[in-house]
Length: 272
Image (cartoon, rainbow, N blue to C red; front, side, top):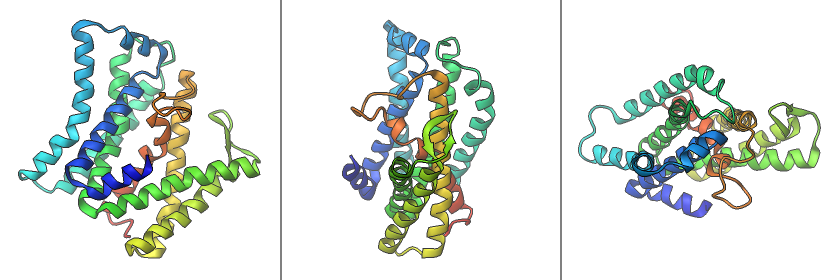
């Protein structure tokens, strides 16, 4: 899937916005179905309720493309500023609501499904807006750099952790993660960031320093989703990728890393 994703990001324009919309729709659907009771309720929707649910998913898919058309026909005000401020507002709402929604729902709790769905929108919205901001304002290689760091983190953490083992990073949340994997992920993320920086002409010192921070944030995102799945007693968020679970399982680190990078770039903390 990686070559197709990179090609769409490189092309930009409407194909990129369609890709972001489809990604958001899949993430929303996987999130909605994670609690078992919520999944049972959604699977048994009939009639207008079923149509309403799929209409909601279609809204997720179409929203980025609508934003593209709005930009094409004179976006009101500073586009980058609006994207970052909306993303920041969604992050703050997510942090506030996580205590009341994410901390209270369990695997067999379907009564809070509307709140769970709203919480999921706040979980993914900052990433959607951040990716649009980075691509629209800073070009494809800015996202290539971000993906290289996140993917490098995942690959480095996996192989280093499997190879070296050692003390657990967070045994109660994710028993398989180790401190050796944590640092191995950072090392490979730094190397990957240096490779993309060389191709894009980015300054090396901020690229390496930024990679360390983004790698750590990415691993926090991974741990967060692992904690949610453990709380809900599910192994994977979905089954769209055979043998690998859902899309959410594959980009859980990106959901934390993308907004942090977008904020750092916008406010001048990270200057590549």
